[in-house]
Length: 287
Image 1 (cartoon, rainbow, N blue to C red):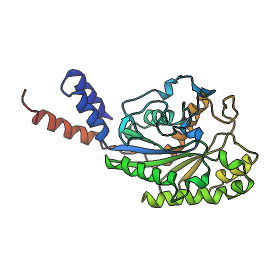
Image 2: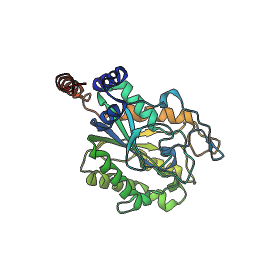
Image 3: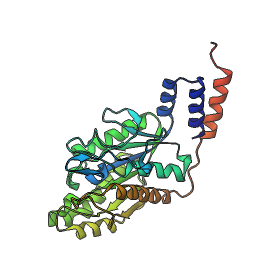
Image 4: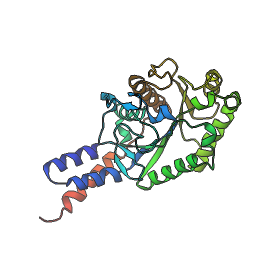
């Protein structure tokens, strides 16, 4: 974080070009988070009658230390709606991702640059996320690309299940399918203890909401945590979280993730900063 602040200062004073600042920001080791699930993860906050109101709360504002992996597989500065070029068949609004990223940085600046990898698609059933499916393959592909520029996948943030409340068979099968999904992802991402933060539903598309919620609340896998969205404010459609609810959920995600850390992350930013200063001032090219 200190390195980034000094780079911004040097850019302001003309020592580093804006292009150089952007390159340094995107190439810095990142704390990477995968955002996956369905519409409440991709974000419908502020969307009414297929129109987003454009309201971005302070907790969701852009930050040079928060990047997102675009649909074109490029790191860019993150902004709402995070999933606009991913969940393209619906209008996206505010989701939990930006509030989460701002909150974790406020509480632990040693995370450095946060890299968000949006993967959520509205209306998807858990069966559509099984290993070998298009959505699963895209998630793993995007995660792999995210790692190429340097960084570590810190957690998967998962909010899905509304579609599985329609059928009793889907609701009863949900727990086993979800556990298999988490286990397969950890295997394919080569991180057997990767933290997973998942959400217990606030709403559903069918009558079997409680069956799915119980499945989510009773997942018994190591390093899997559940935050409960029940009671959070919904949009007029009765299905999607409102903008204030998405902000609150993002902060809940942040608190749950920080609890997975046995000790505060030890940033190597001072070391990088020291090396940068030495290389910059002792090897600065002549004018």
